Amino acid sequence: MESEVVTKSGPSRRERLRAGMVEDIKAIARRQLVEQGPGAVSLRGIAREMGTASSGLFRYFPSYNDLISALLVDAYNSVAEAVETARDARAPKDHAGRWFAVCAAYRRWSLDNPAEFALAHGTPVPGYQAPLEVTGPDASRTIGVALDVYASAVTAGAAKPARTHFPPGIETGPLWRAIIADRAAEHEPRLAAIILTAWTSVVGYLVAEIFGSLTSLIDDTDRLYDAHVRTVMAGMGFRPNLVDATGG
Amino acid sequence: MESEVVTKSGPSRRERLRAGMVEDIKAIARRQLVEQGPGAVSLRGIAREMGTASSGLFRYFPSYNDLISALLVDAYNSVAEAVETARDARAPKDHAGRWFAVCAAYRRWSLDNPAEFALAHGTPVPGYQAPLEVTGPDASRTIGVALDVYASAVTAGAAKPARTHFPPGIETGPLWRAIIADRAAEHEPRLAAIILTAWTSVVGYLVAEIFGSLTSLIDDTDRLYDAHVRTVMAGMGFRPNLVDATGG
DNA sequence: TGTACATCAGTGAACGCGCGTTCACTGATGTAC
DNA sequence: TGTACATCAGTGAACGCGCGTTCACTGATGTAC
Image (cartoon, rainbow over all chains, first blue to last red):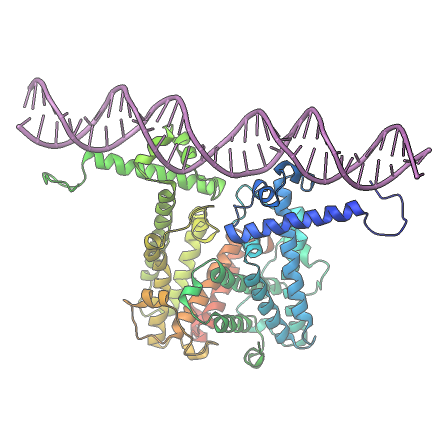
């Protein structure tokens, strides 16, 4: 299994070709996802487009489900990276700006990658259920970023949970405690409640914009999202002057 | 085509049997929707469960798509009725209470009818695209109720758009103007923006609770939703004392 | 450098499945005189 | 009340489709001596 010769370095020729092939397959699957929607991704369709025998794809993915899982993991990590980059582009002390940037990057990524967004947030491919042990950690990366930014803001006094409508002691569940374990554990419990509902508001907006009829209901969706994010920020207890002043 | 004899009244025996059959088919389809998820609803599956030939179903629905459309229309009207009933159970002048009741009824209905909720908000059945002329008016019924309640609140001074983060003149699209046409047309434009984003926040929460992992992240989702709705209300410019005082 | 063997990539046929839809048909139920 | 015809409900076989997956196979590419 392991490479025994350590001559030059890195992957062998075969391994490189193999990795390239895996990437090609995923790229075509992504295109099918965009163009035909989820549920239209099929191994046979991919093989057709690649000009190979459909049975050959089983050399690269042991089953159809594994392909979908790989796409999901890629999507989760792609959006997480986009969001992390946006966060890091702002000064660590600009807490409101960081939150705003995270939300903006999340929307940007979603509009640019509607297929991956659909995969992650739509009803999944029929018959497919994401194996939690595969997608769990990757799925929680983005909300983890959101939590970190918010928690820092709270610590610094830029946001005050007491200003929200959330009761202090609202109970978190086991999965949340697992996520938060290796992060700052001293947060008061309601941070979970606040960040989660805030995030559902943001995602709900994007679902409406990307899947739904929002675009035909409102012309200027950029300004709409801007106002929406500010509203959410206010609901999270960000200081009012920060909510108004933070620029896009 | 039209019934020529007006003897006693109403539908003939055949028509009653027919209507009953249509209801049976839809009931089984709904069950399949709940138990196997969307994408698992199939005419053959329904026929199997009914013990009839699958070809016989074409007497009742000209095609598979028509079945799905019928389920969708039913779902839209069912939730709209639930929401209207909840609204009317509160005094017309209790604007905040009405909004709160509408949100509560919407969640109640969604938790009670996850299949229909999935049909309306998930990525639809693969290969199915809702014909807008069929589902449009029914789909907009519920948001219409939300709009009415909010508009009344604004007129009565219980909510002030000026207190929100939405600019006054944000442009609405053609579809919105079509919906709003026969309703109070003198609303300032930003009411559309406010109500739509507020609604995406509410729906986004429910999507997370019903499809997603929210339930494993937070234990007390009743209180969570309560706080979420209050947060949304504050973001719509409801008077602070109303937001806090309104009871569930 | 050349030979012998193992590993892997890709092929093409086949299996079994479930689907929506059509069609000619048999009976039952209704309607007209 | 009885007869003749039209309408509708339900049947069962068939069509054509696309799918995931398996399997024995042919060549190519790598590795060991």
